[in-house]
Image (tube, rainbow, N blue to C red; front, side, top):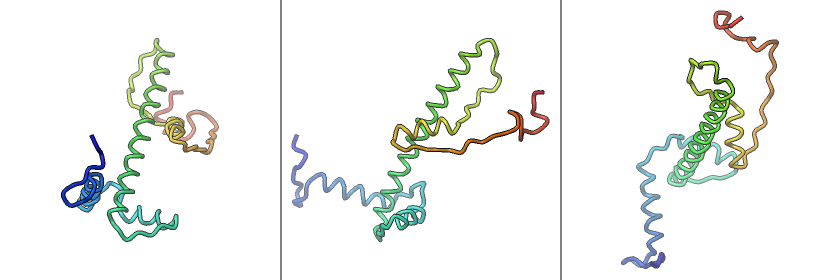
Length: 136
């Protein structure tokens, strides 16, 4: 099949698909507001009056964030599954998933983003917890 077939008005099919997609962005409201995208694009020196391009960047950003979050969730599940295997004799009451900075860092590393986070120190593992929730 020839991907560069001419349509009846003389344009390529790929051009028509792209035009249709860009037109559909006018009716789409992305999760990331246009003003936020415009702000960060302006900070990088990019000015564009075309709202379709702003929304295209928003959609791409939204997809990237969703992929990173999904990968971080998989990291979290794998980490917590390893902890359960190590402690088979203890029954875990709490099945909540707890996303850590380590999970997020591993997921971002797969996309070439290296995150260095501050180490936090406490006097004891229970420092900062509500006294009623401490198991002492």
